[in-house]
Image 1 (cartoon, rainbow, N blue to C red):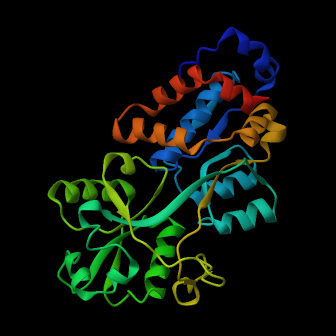
Image 2: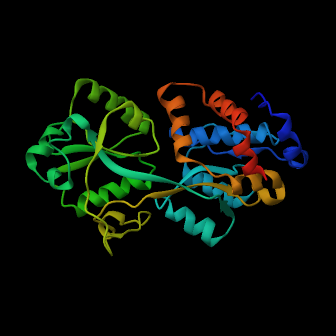
Image 3: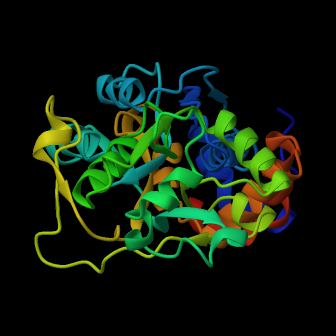
Length: 315
């Protein structure tokens, strides 16, 4: 990666930190666009203003493996770029609150909802609409009598979360989940919208699909005491979990191995102080996901033109 050009006024701010940066920082390679964008920005800051070395470890996309590697602290992997909570509660309990080997920054907020294209919003507005057999039949792609909805990727706890919700909303006899990689689903979404076909799907913010397409959320029951009680990592997660209300906003962190506090103190300080603006993250996602720009170029350009923000992360 080429080094980011730094304004002269910023050199004094980071010179001492850059001088002490040592070990190469290994960054997990999570697959969704927001995580990729954040990973490249972290890499650009380390290799630019901090004058160190960083590497996004190609193919290292399993969040549980990344977390276990950060816990070991041996430098095989140091950064989990986009830790969604409470989706990854098991990681939080084991390594952040439990072993205390993993640290986090101040989070940004995200939303999680079920959507339809807005050309269906007049027919499908609420969970109650999903209970109507004629509505479910509209989404039955394989003719087995059940409508399909995209619940997410196989590796996401949110995928299990939606299956619990559909169970507790009384929808299991009419609907079944499709569990597919995000990229595969995005291709299906594009085709469905081009042809104005029915499609029901989970999505979150920030993400570029909200800018690329006109989509509408499904209204869920308001939150109430006891409406959410689940252990999505349990063996019998579907039977024992309960989730019968709208999701609260997610809190989304950059997590890092606390071993960096000894192995590379400037980077540990930077990661602990990095504070992301969801509107900025959405812009990165638009450029990378929708406009197909190279994430490395997006990151380096943003760092070069936003050193006032970056300096706040470094000091």
